[in-house]
Amino acid sequence: MAETDDGFDLFDLRVDVIIPEGGAVYCGAKPGDHFELHGEMLYLPPGQGISIYSLSSVLPLLAAKQRPTHAHDWMTTDAEIACPDPNCSTRLRIRRTGLRRFSHAATTAVPLNLSADPAPVADMVPPVNDE
Image (cartoon, rainbow, N blue to C red; front, side):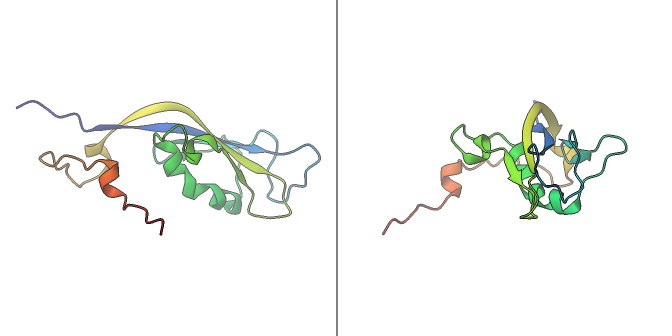
């Protein structure tokens, strides 16, 4: 019996704090602040922190940004997220920096169902009713 590759790919991400020249900063960010995401692990440079409020604005998007998306999808083209404080001028820019391979077996206790073919995306999305 041939072994089945249970691998999948995720993008590594780098999230940079963007501070416009002369912009007000209320989240404690400094020029050059950033973090990286490799799989599920978030890495900050030594001695650097990040506001939990700034992190909360970008966190829901990171898992989607790690996955391959269609070239026309806004998740592919849009990269900057505003600080949640409306008076703060900072933005968080998400960049894909590399591709990393993971094993299904190493990331979950749920076994693959190798006898079932994955459903095409079209089968998972309900049709749009334009009435």
